[in-house]
Image (cartoon, rainbow, N blue to C red):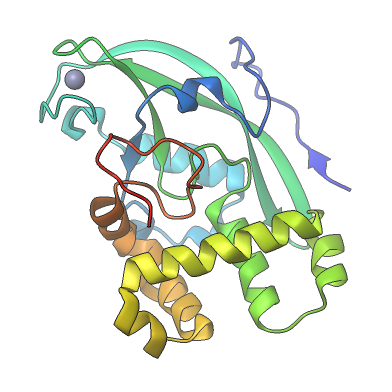
Length: 225
Ligand SMILES: [Zn+2]
């Protein structure tokens, strides 16, 4: 059973359509906060606490505009919205509501939501969640057991597996991908990738790790293979 925690009292903001479609994220390029996890022991945080801790670490003044490229826009706080964020904590699937802040770039007039690196655009489940599922899958746990444990459908599990393998290839390149097992790649993500390397995938592919190909990239340059 999914545990739904109460929304924080100070989140007196409007609700947007529920997953998988986040209108705010669908039509806006997201600002991503990277290399936040290298500064903290994220294993000590709940998903909700980690989200707000990471958000406090992001200095919006140092975030360039993802639309026009202005390096230090004089960002205006534009609006907020609520989205779901699902984590896996001590054996339970936990669903939180988190507040996303949108900022307006005075140079080009566009607005952008800001997400820490472990929140996947357009997905409710956190990156930690989907990687935990992938770990169990590639360790050979039964499909039915994984589906029950994480409360996801079998079709979702296979869709995540396909996306994981595709992004592994995009990250490593075709040659290195063939030489790197899924277990090795998951170990790399756990030890190094999540802490300080996610920005490399973002820079190389123009989208966030585990962001589905059905969702728009941060600009029009990305060409899916
Ligand atoms: Zn701009």
